[in-house]
Length: 131
Image (cartoon, rainbow, N blue to C red):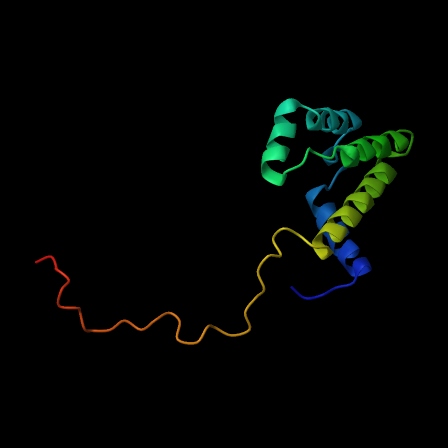
């Protein structure tokens, strides 16, 4: 992945989010964000997180999203959409540029020598073949 700076990544994410959410009605409402916050605390969600990651779910981010939405309540809908897109773009840019559980393997610059092993025409004598 080519390295980009944070501002470039934010601009790229904003451009993408504006295409995905073209109108004000496409961004989530405060009740949706509140539901997601409450869903984070449900026993099943906590058990799944404990099983997958070895720790309970952190619901603080969802709480902050809800609080941010409530702070936008009295803005013009288009300004609200712009603010929401900017916040999500920053989140995605930080996530994209930060470390991830997917960063386990290093990309090879060249293939392994002698891999895959060459197939030989010689079949060992002690191997039965289907005839």
